[in-house]
Image 1 (cartoon, rainbow, N blue to C red):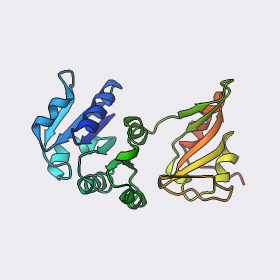
Image 2 (image 1 turned 30 degrees about the horizontal axis):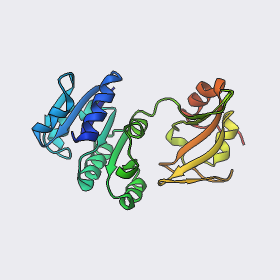
Image 3 (image 1 turned 135 degrees about the vertical axis):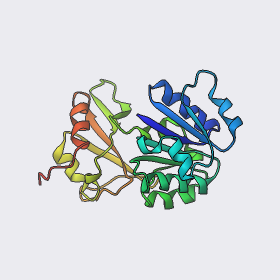
Image 4 (image 1 turned 180 degrees about the vertical axis):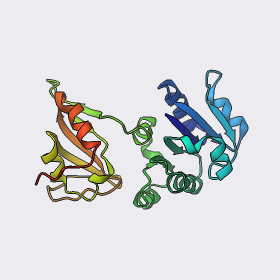
Length: 221
């Protein structure tokens, strides 16, 4: 897949190198040409000098064929403007913005754009937002038969009750992360866009649960 990254500081360059190592096509945008030196001699992706929220700059970086976009520059306002442009104008489904101010992160989450506050940041968290395919194991019980997994949902699950996950799959919801806070849901709790769902799943059922949640739910009530 093609990924566009705005910002070639320590975060952006690390992210670009990691994603390139995973076999993805990468374009990095920065207004300072010297910043691209952080990518190193082995980087074979595209570098574009310009503002990441400028339409022509984004087009040059291949935004029209991109599968994911990360706004990880040093400016909160620039990041959120670029992220909204990628989501709302170019229709990029997998968008994430780096936000320095955690208080602002909640506001931007409500706009439907996943944010990673700097104080909580790791490149692995960003990769989860940008490449949501497949389950991400967070904990395995000693026998190896049961795992706590973060599994992405098809957008049609949002607006449905937690109980529908448990009637459609063999998984059980352990907790959800909503606007950066963990909560233990009730069966009647309604899923909201931006919720991160953490599930207990039998190891042998992970592939089946992942496939079920990647599709619209079936009402089995």
